[in-house]
Length: 244
Ligand SMILES: [Zn+2]
Image 1 (cartoon, rainbow, N blue to C red):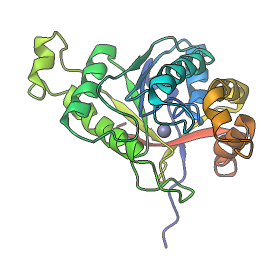
Image 2: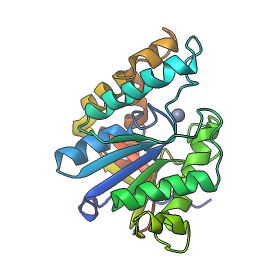
Image 3: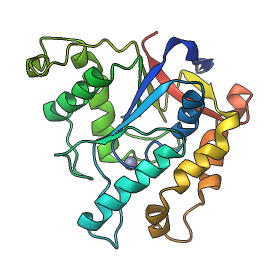
Image 4: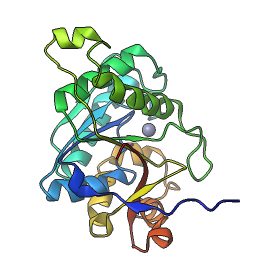
């Protein structure tokens, strides 16, 4: 059996503007926020786009109540790592997000608005590296991001976007985090505490998961510390890089 290729450091000099696209409040806070903290502190521009407000995520709370609460928790979690632009799509409901043209168009539109050098999303693989089944919205959004990256660069796809004033934008790189076949890593050893603060902002959501659910520092210790042996660092974010 061929051993997996060694993880390479992501060349962080190749991008200044980053757009992170995920399904739910908290998706970016399970590790990615550590890299975001690093980049914002380095002067890079990072913005978030979420497909839903995670309104179906709290069993004891109606979506009408949970949606605004989780939206605010996401804004607080983003602020903890210096991100102040957090956008939410309308028209996609938590838990039943469908891969399709409306989702691709909405993401392609945001790419053309933000003009990122690097787009980040979470894996669309059926399973996470640990073997857990990847939730349906994550699969739909992750795959839609891959396709929207191409759509954003093609003026003949979603031509109404050009009519709206959004010219094509070529995204140079896409990093798919939590992917079972990672190729690159980001050293976030100095950004663990920021990541914990970011995840801790989701207090109502995490509390509703019960006292047995691991605390943010423990969870992030597992997630960001998992690749430490492979990369020789205390903490790292890993992902599969698409593009150069
Ligand atoms: Zn999620």
